Length: 149
Ligand SMILES: Nc1ncnc2c1ncn2[C@@H]1O[C@H](COP(=O)(O)OP(=O)(O)OP(=O)(O)O)[C@@H](O)[C@H]1O
Ligand SMILES: [Mg+2]
Picture: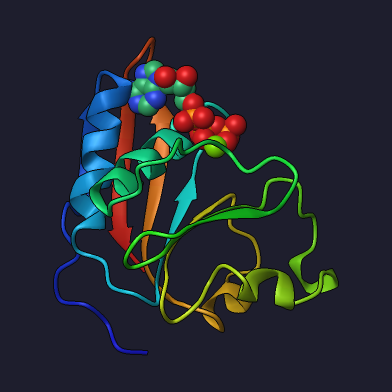
């Protein structure tokens, strides 16, 4: 797999508001290309969707960005298209129809995957470029770590 020399705001960041976490998402988004996927980890309510919302805004998505509820993902028809996948309720990705992911992780699309499972399956659909891990740090404070994978 080719690797990127530079993917933007790598390292450990502290944010103190949702908008600061969105801003980090925007910065990372601007380094991404179609076919790339970013994984987002961290406990419930840490701000994964908030980070993705900032990324989507930077990529030209103008509609509301919320957690997918009745499907595993949401596609936004921006240019390039953006996909937001949430695998929280998918216990075993191998047991699911692989086509489930193919709708979202595509060569023409920049994808964000919350609660990633079975990294090998994800890797067969997209170039996994970064892992974003968000942790609570009291109140509205969060620690956002962005690393290459
Ligand atoms: N610094 C911060 N960064 C991000 N979100 C914050 C911050 N401070 C407070 N919040 C709030 O925390 C919540 C984060 O919710 P969000 O849906 O983004 O989390 P999530 O990690 O996607 O949760 P889930 O695991 O349920 O998908 C929002 O209500 C947001 O406003
Ligand atoms: Mg979420």
